[in-house]
Amino acid sequence: MKKRIDSKYLIMKIDLHNKSGGGEMTGTIAVIMIFSIPIIAIVSDHLKSNTKQKAKMLATELELEKVKQQNFIAETEKMRLELQKMQLDYAHSADPILIDLQKEKAI
Image 1: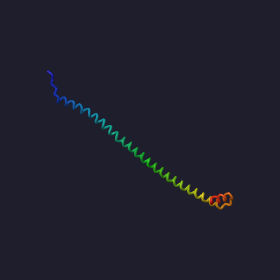
Image 2: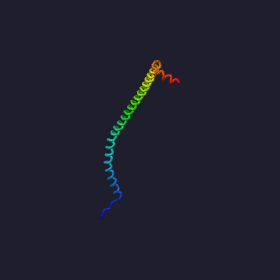
Image 3: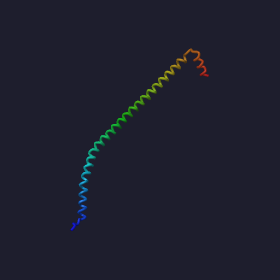
Image 4: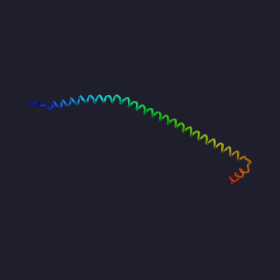
């Protein structure tokens, strides 16, 4: 006589088998979580430091551009003053060519 296998017994045995294999998966997930948290922290810290460094670099570049602009304005003013001085020097000059040019300009 063959023993009759009850379907409830078979389902219960399959469930126990699945539960024992799930512990291995849980352990794997736990290990992954333990190692991924520090790695994520390191990566995010690196990105944050890169962002801060880029912000400092942009601030330095902005300051440099301001200095360049001030230098340009100073040089332009210096050249304007030199030109005015030269015009005054030539205005009082006794050079006949300059006197003729001034007369032509006035006409």
